Amino acid sequence: MPDAVTPSFLDSIRAIVGDRGLLTDPNDTAPYSEDWRRLYRGRTPAVVRPATTRELAAVVGLCARFGISVVPQGGNTSMVGGAVPAEDGSELVLSTARMNHVRAIDPVDMTMTIEAGVTLKAAQLAAAEAGCLLPLSISSEGTAQIGGVLAVNAGGNNTVRYGNARDMVLGLEVVLPDGEIWNGLRRLRKDNTGYCLRQLFVGSEGTLGIITAAVLKLAPAPREIAVALCGVGAVEDALALFTRFQAHDAASISAFELMSGLGMQFVLRHIPGASLPVETPAPFYVLVELATPRPNAGLRAMLEGVLEQALTDGIVSDAAIAESEAQRAAIWKLREEHSEAQKREGASIKNDVSVPVSKVPAFIREATVACEALMPGVRVVPFGHMGDGNIHFNLEQPEGSDATWFLAQDHAVMDTVNEVVRRYDGSFSAEHGIGRLKPYMMPDWRGGAELALMQRIKAAIDPAGIMNPGKVLPEEPAL
Ligand code: MLT
Ligand code: ZN
Image (cartoon, rainbow, N blue to C red; front, side, top):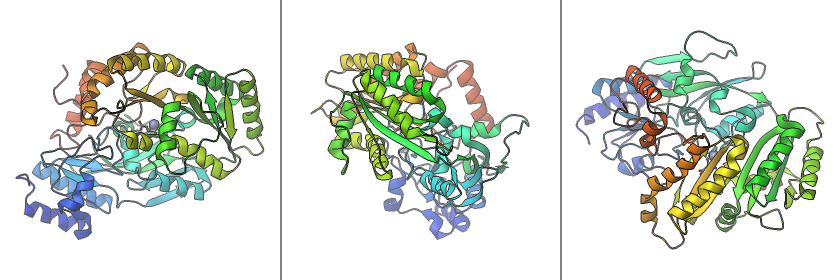
């Protein structure tokens, strides 16, 4: 136990959160000390699980007084090690899991006020019960919690239509690094009153404060949804299909996802119950979802019409349209299980990158050539949110290679991919954030005035540096 985290300090924490709110047994704290990808294994003297914002604020206030660092954690689904404590056992994990109430939903204002520990899935269901749509969907939504989703500004499947998490945030409640509570839970569509503080915390990955509750903007619930899985011969064909849907009715596209033949093989191999709804396997696949709140909009006919023409023109090789909710879920499962299937296949290096949508085919082609030249035998598995330009350019270890050796090449591999990303004016982190994986890239990509400004903001809000240390910003000043 590090010096500052003494038994009497833990007694003071227990006095705030009670026995239920404090875990100190290493068996209990272990799951909170490791990320789901098993890339980072830290240690923590305690996991604190407050039940309310006041409790959480009191805990942070105490940590501030004793100079103890805190690592905020929601569902622990970070792809970049953003929620794991350091190896030296000096940091407390602060879990928001027990703060899981939907405080209010207003179908007239089209807003919901929810606490950080509500899972994204539970938030979606609550919105649906009120006849609305929370238009944010990510593969880990059953586990990921709203606080973490906002802290990383998650994107996911519906960005093409609704934007990223930050586009849904009207108000926030945040516990600041000194333990003060900022209540900015306003639900106004217009509110120009100085700097937009809520957007500073969204995407800050818990390095400036802990998001404890939020007001989210809702959308009208869809009345008609049409989903298809299409086989295509090349990514260029996927782009051609996208532009056809855009030309027909751009506003109805709610998801346009790309998968590779190899990624699909992994899903079919490792995920029980997964099956391909098209007859002929293809080099790439597209999942297209159209949705509208308008009654009798004829979406299904539109989907069929566009696909028939695309089949005739040779853009699509085969297509299956979901005929029921169960078929729709089965098609989505093929896409959503990509990460899990890759994990079961072996070690993978993830590149969560974005380029302009029009450059996706060229990016994938060039990055594939570059990675195969760097590491013969590496298995390239590009997939993701093609409709918004966010590709998960993931690489699976060469068959028969050693996983530890492969993972040790991560910087060389990521740097190779990023060189191509840079040529297309893309970003080295599209939706997963920076976490512990990518701070080293920040000086190169965001150096100069931009990084200096971020460092000044961090120093102003968290001068003692106790909020999620080692995440987002590089240790050394970039200038
Ligand atoms: C997804 O979209 O499924 C995840 O963000 C991707 C990943 O595993 O890289
Ligand atoms: Zn994604």
